[in-house]
Length: 251
Image: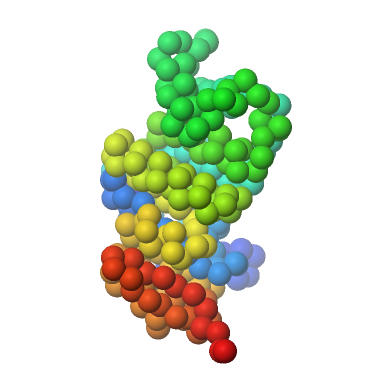
């Protein structure tokens, strides 16, 4: 998947300016930046909700030329806040199989949903209405629904925002496993630098609608880049094979 020279102008101001990056199969791209940096606007352009200038291609084909109702086979999306429904957990995840159903559920679709229920530790909530779940449980359900869609690109807007650290690690671990197993592409908007370092393969840093870095984590987790990204003096420590990032606080 390639995005080349993507720009989006909101009224008189540019929300995005000349964004270029790519996402390879089996990889997770982490998009980071302060609030208002253009992260969600970028995602909406990829999804086709907004239409800017530039090229967005998948396997050489222009995604923007594909009708919205047919993009479900290539793009699946979990927004930061998903709309709550009155369906059961099972039926909510089954919604992800709609692009592959003609008239009713079949054994293949039921098996796929049952496997995701187990994998996301939702099996004991299978018949519970989703509006009776906690925020973290709902998020697991919505991510499972997106994966059930079996698309080529999985897009997640702050998937760990409502999760405690244990559940965040668990969910990101499952996502990483599935991305490798299915050899798909994944784009994640994420704020936690430490989680991002451990679970993403490549990074796109946005600031005021402009791209200040795209590439591997080996090059981007440097003090001068992180300080510039967030306009704050940060400490970065390397501990064995990982980094620990935090604010520099005077004592």
